[in-house]
Amino acid sequence: MDSSSSKKSLVSSSNRGSINGGGGSISPSSYDYSFKILLIGDSGVGKSSLLLSFMISNCQYSLQDLSPTIGVDFKIKLLTIGGKRLKLTIWDTAGQERFGTLTSSYYRGAHGIVLVYDVTRRETFTNLSEIWAKEVDLYSTNEECIKILVGNKVDRDSERAVTRQEGMALAQEHKCIFYECSAKTRENVQQCFKDLTLKIMERPSLLEQGSLVVKRQILKQEQFYQEKHNRSCCS
Image 1 (cartoon, rainbow, N blue to C red):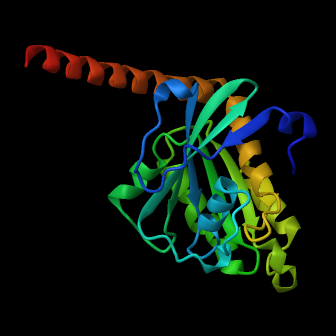
Image 2 (image 1 turned 180 degrees about the vertical axis):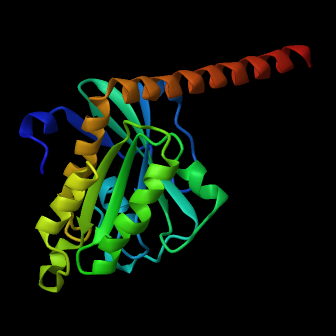
Image 3 (image 1 turned 120 degrees about the horizontal axis):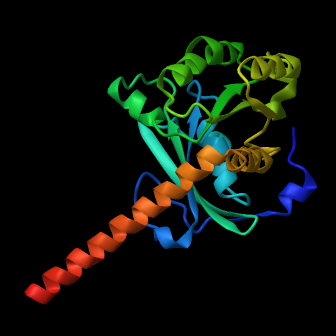
């Protein structure tokens, strides 16, 4: 399913907030809402490639040569929708790792979850039901969290092991939005993440949480500068 043209016209984006693994900073006064989005699924399904394709829409390097993610990585994307400035913090973790105590904190507070499988590897599709969807139910702390099921690598259609109909049926079973994408050709990648963001903004409870995050960050920043000012006055 693609976003309508009217929705697309509301959305603009910026990569200037891109952060890899926690470096850099963005002032909380530069956005109105902050949302946490997770990428989950088996190792090698193309989660990191999908994320980079979304972050850098005109990248010239080969996405197929990316090494598997070690541990946890995140990137930040700034979007403007309907005049509202959004900060998306998108988390990516290695699918082959079982982090134990990290698992629950990884899911905590997520506003959107992207469940990814490889259309050419049936076991990655099966594992979404048997492993990943169960983890979402167990650890997700937002009952209204928006979920999107993504079948990646549709550019390799001749090697397909999972039909589109099967993907749609699984998405319906778990009440997910459904997309088939290609990180390599970037087919549907932008639409996938933008549609997810639009759905998050349609939920009042998620919108309120996203606003509260920003208010807390602004308060912490103000306290930091006030303490810094007080120390300089007293020195």
